[in-house]
Image (cartoon, rainbow, N blue to C red):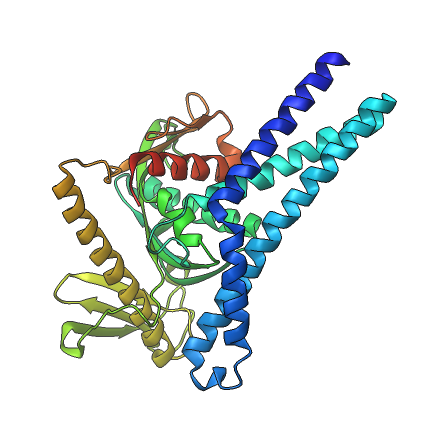
Length: 371
């Protein structure tokens, strides 16, 4: 049992070191000062005369309270765990030692989650996210692959208990989808999911090939932050072409009897967005305008980053196009081409088990100095 005790003791020391690092980066003292200031602002009887500002203050207040509470709870749990470990050692109680081991696993996962959030310091990292998936090379296999990716990300959001809303989906004729755009409505969704941007490659025995040959197909993932009212994105009416059409489902089945779906084309940049999830044309147009603003904001961010990278004289901020391979035949593997993170269980990944890939991507991005 001595070896087991030594291993548990080492694990507890590792957790203590990780939590101390988180507390240092989080700066709970500074957050507590912010909390007092925000509580005073929230108590102002005239707060809701400016609803936009009021929502920002109350939202920030809730976030700061949650951050302080989370770190405090983890510190209390670690202290209790050390006490329980001392009790198990003194009484040589195997059942209590098993409780200690189980709590170490649970606490490590929560500390890993929180540690990753401390790395999200980009200008827009705290924002909600808009994700667009597009079928690329590979024909019907690529369209099917794009739909598989859509399910993967929606399942990931379900696991995280993040709310999602699908704005538009363009279905392919034979199977799968040509493209889709959906929102992930959770704090830090952009910071977390932006590392997924790039081309995702699938290798498998094609279910659409009568000779059962191996096919390679590609799908593109674009992630942009949701625009806030304070963002200076001005779009003139003469810069936009508006097209209306009827919404449709798989196989061309009509899901709306009126021309309520809206497609906006931003003429200067060629950016096209669509929305068909609302019942009225007016609502769809408003949502499409928000989508367009987000894409223009991300374009502006990328242009600014490109200027910085050019001044630096390096291209570390560019992650390249192809960023992950999913191989289902002749062997089973998912590998990230930037971080070299890999697993032999693609079924779990395609069912939304993405934390390891996303966390390693965030750490890799931080090490590269990209934001």
